[in-house]
Length: 299
Image (cartoon, rainbow, N blue to C red):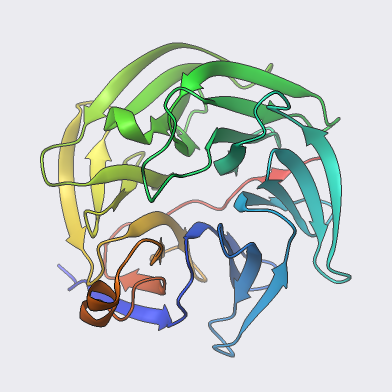
């Protein structure tokens, strides 16, 4: 059994680091700082980070087939051209809820971008309840609403056969599964597949590995847990040196490295001193399992 190694590779104080995606073409990790209103890229080769500032909180991003990125920011789906740093609005949602913003999202196996909303936080993980919804942006820029009455729309991913959508509404303290029709992009039959235990924290972002198991970053839990969505059992816990773990993805040349984003919003000075790497990006190696390449938005 290889030993697990955890290293802080980007020692920046991102306010809410989120939505890590490995971009194989460029050999970089792309991610957002939600409240810092930035889209960032880090190169393991050069150890350098670059960022583009945007005009609203940016909840998540996906790779775009035509180049650049698709963003869920403010209450709009947008496109970012990385080279000229230009943001173009593709579609708007929640127009009757000016206090809402997008949160986590991911591109589905057919090149659609799913992302959900929530109310702006009163303080970290404290929101107006039931204000959010889950949406899909289609390549033609039309939008489908899956459901509403969401507290904090969070992690999404798909089973390896694409028939199941996994989804987290954080304040339910559970990971859900829905039947997913990859042809139409519609979902149905929502149910819990894992309920977090006392002390595990709040379920946040997640990703799937090449064995079909889910990895869930647990906010305020300082950990990433591996769960089997078939049996509802937790298989593994990997603890980090910071509490506010927000999301995770696989990357690196063969997708054997896990990258974990973290946050420092809401921490007082004493907490920041105790956990100086809060808000940084961590790399975990030696997990003994690989991830799968991310999908690209087709629009």
